[in-house]
Image (cartoon, rainbow, N blue to C red; front, side, top):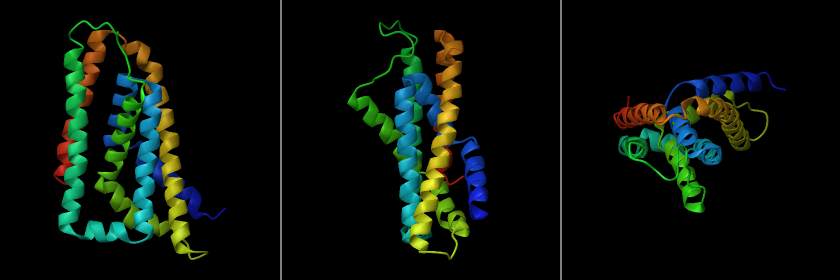
Length: 210
């Protein structure tokens, strides 16, 4: 195995572990909707990373991020996605104040709910300019000259997505294990409020280029 591959895995794993929009989103999906929608969100987040890495491989993301207007649109779109998720989480916390027949932790398991979960992860990944910057500036540093550069870059992008999937599966499993500890309505409502505020703050930060 080339020595750069373990280093790449370690780098992407540590980056995945950094607190940010992805972790806040996974907490929301796991606590609010359950493990199945959370796994769909993980898959869609990986899809977004594959899109970024493929775009980097063909040079599209470099052009996109070099264009101030295009970069601004990406930032604003990513910020909007996080803001919408944050507002919806806060609205869900407000609804929890009223009695519900569905009980705590109810989830929409139908196709519309899963489509929403997929869109949330994909939108967050594609709207995250930091993922684009990583795909353009960091990922190519691990590409060797052995073999086609295009395929090597795409392969590293797939590995990047796989590392993120492994981390988020572990992360959401841990969150799910603690779900019983936060089953009380007041605690769940408090967590939803905190998560919603964090998502809104991250949305403002992303849109502002922080």
